[in-house]
Image (tube, rainbow, N blue to C red; front, side, top):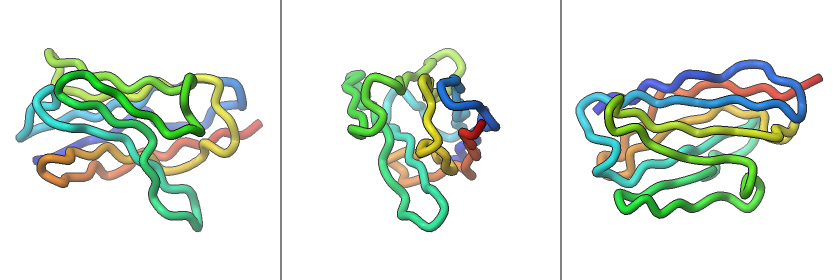
Length: 112
C-alpha cells in the first residue's frame, strides 16, 4: 500500500487549503482512513478520520473548520481546511488504518 499526500503550502491566516492523498494497493472507501499532523517539537496527533460507513470524527481544534472526504473514482482521501490558523502549521500525513500505512507527509504553513 502506498499513499501519496499533496496540496500543502504557505497560506495566510484565515485562508484555505485542500490536501489530497492518492492511494495505491488499497481502496480508500473500504478502509478506515485518517489525517494526522505533527507540528515541530510536538507529537503526531489525529486530525480527522472517516470510516467505510462515512462516519467522521474530528479533533476539537479543527471541528467545523476541516472536512475529511473520499473520492471513490479517484481513490483519494482529502482534507479541506478552512479558516486556517497559525497553530494549524504542521506536516500532515494520511493514514490507512487497515494496513497501518502512512503517506510521506505534506507541509502546511499558516503565516502572514
